[in-house]
Image (cartoon, rainbow, N blue to C red):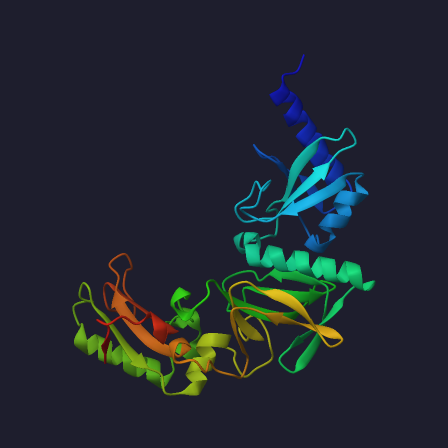
Length: 317
């Protein structure tokens, strides 16, 4: 006779297989507390609600991270009921081809919003306006690697709109706009203002950055600011290193006219610059012994960040 724990494990495994069998790109997964279904290949997460219902299960509700019934700190939990009336928490977990950023709540939340809008529209897409351009979209994917784009909207799996996203509600919540070394791009690291800033740092700290020390310099060239915000390929076609826009915090897909727009706590369209003083990009360097050093200076970390993150002890150079 099976114990309750064994029964639950068998039931959970069977339920995962039941859902996964509705789509060739879904695999049954394992978890100690929920039914974990893993996406693989070219699976479109917008299909997940449909897959649950197609498998003969009733979708009771969807719990966001932190809400009652949620079993994931980052992903949506789908509370489903089987034919016996028993409820199970189901999570679309990370699978082959899905990066760690795919588990970010912002992406998951946007996918759910998009899926609902498409379902209610009677069409297989929505029209999304970014600045003065309108795009046809029906999916969202995490952008692979570490480019400026964090995720992108797609139409039939083809990228359409590239988004850079920052967490938080204010400029102080940013980590940075971008780096100053050539990892940030050749146009960034070779820019005259970057080279001048680095040269000044090398003169001030020839033996390494000093403890409890931070310095900054305002950026004069708007082009360098654009490179930092939108990517090293700014001025070229939109892509992974020339994003359509930067958004901060909670994002929503909102109806406007015959289509939709994206809203957030703060956003900047490609070609524009932040108007608020606290969001102005500045060159910044600080003591960081955990790093090997930047630009040949030991214990130095440099970046381009919002002015709001400067402290009263940060010196202008």
